[in-house]
Image (tube, rainbow, N blue to C red; front, side, top):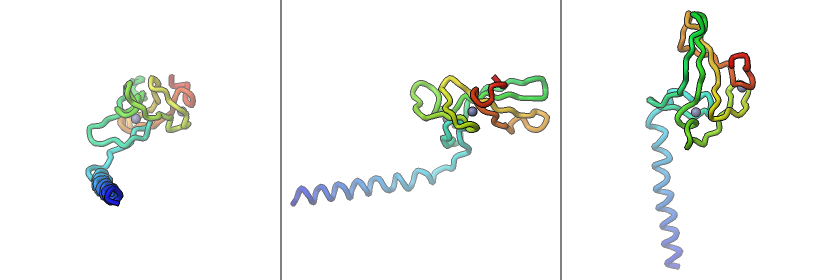
Length: 120
Ligand SMILES: [Zn+2]
Ligand SMILES: [Zn+2]
């Protein structure tokens, strides 16, 4: 009976411990965007890694490699193409294009090797 009471107290304590963490953490900061590959919310300072190549002055091609949560040897997040929803391997990229005459930061995601092979 005493053991039962201790067990009950322990569970109540655990619930009490879990609750404030679960409620508090998402309030702190809103994500600034999402990784186009793994959809992980990105906070301030967490950036998507990419390479930009200028093709003449009519096109800026961006190879999006992913974010810190889906890149590197420890990352386990599933990466998929936002256009065709197929899996994208860790060493593969997706392509996005921007028109530097309009806005070179305004990227139009074209797709991965499977659904937009002409860009590779
Ligand atoms: Zn990512
Ligand atoms: Zn694709």
